[in-house]
Image 1 (cartoon, rainbow, N blue to C red):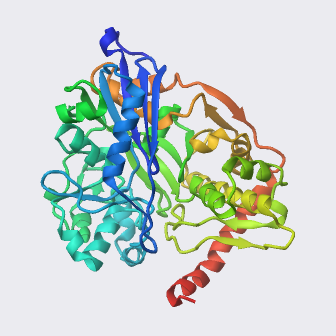
Image 2 (cartoon, rainbow, N blue to C red; image 1 turned 30 degrees about the vertical axis):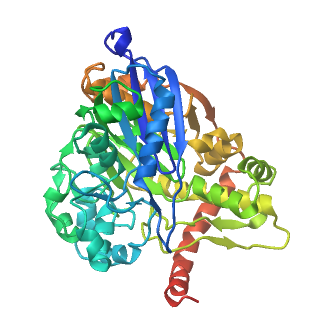
Image 3 (cartoon, rainbow, N blue to C red; image 1 turned 90 degrees about the vertical axis):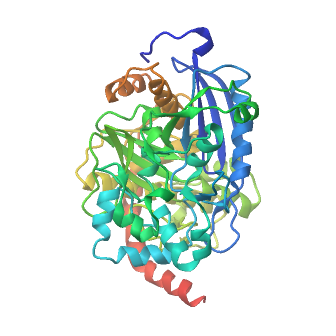
Length: 502
């Protein structure tokens, strides 16, 4: 990494990654060496069918604890933020939450999403904002609140996500970074402004959203109150940072043409970095900003590690045991196929209509077969996204992967087998946090400005392991075709079951 020399008191950068189920804080030197880490989890509540919400105060406490653990009383030159995208949180005049955070996984707006997708201008809106019309989108959530829960829609002074909340409480200044803003469905990608048509659908005026800033912008400095909670010096600058997906590309060094980033945490995604905004003609992919001259194009799947979490809860055994049993099960799980849509699925169809399904379940199938089929199903959904990227005319020469799944040797190899391409794994698992650190360094002048400087810095990411597809790759390609047919043939049946309550 090429950075300017920094004094010993400012020779570190603290990256805070506010994720879906935990906050991770990582203290790096300006050359990318990890000095300290902190990690605090929090629950995802489901108070009613389709809901997936969190308590923002619990998240704030987790951020404070993770930062204290990672920083250890040091004086970083800058703090930079990463966060999960697509959350929706209303706040009052003081910046305090009005109700829970609606996460990307909240599916209660699915009916409104279906209605909006039927509009003649739906694809034009998708292309202009880069965000598919889906229940995950803050635009769609706001339209749902406006129609079905108008008092909740009207109550907040401002709307934003978890990033705006943390920035506001930490510095006293609210801002929407252009990366997270590009994932709301409310921002015109080309103009980098809130979109008038989207605002109208959401029932908002622009003054109820925060100003859009660059991902390298210094939003403010740490207040005295926040400094005590974080155990950092007051006056420490905070850089806005970006969404965790685009930052994973940067943190993996996947910012050159043809290098695709794959991440599997609670959810999953495949993203390719491009030098101009682009959405494929069929509307299967998203486009989110990383910096002023870099965007990520790809697709997100809702069901990643959450599928393994469900299996551990359902079967009553730990994840390691399930992974061992799945690894001991032959590829294809003895003819058992899982469609692991436990939460409303996203890419590449974005309709969320097909629920979780096991096909060809037989008496001979045991726990290992079910677990393997579920994990194969997650990877097969990502294969559909990979094929959509290729169909859109984008070359994929290399795949790099990150996320909690990479701790499992079995799951790493399974991903390579199902995608049918070599997959590289970076040293360490701080992809999004390292990406945020690079933006933070650039924001305070410790890294040269411009996309080339970021790409040069990201080139120093070490790929510790590259896995080639194994003999089962051909079979997984055939199963991928089956998965696509299953969706076509069963989505209407599942929709009828849901509508009738049978």
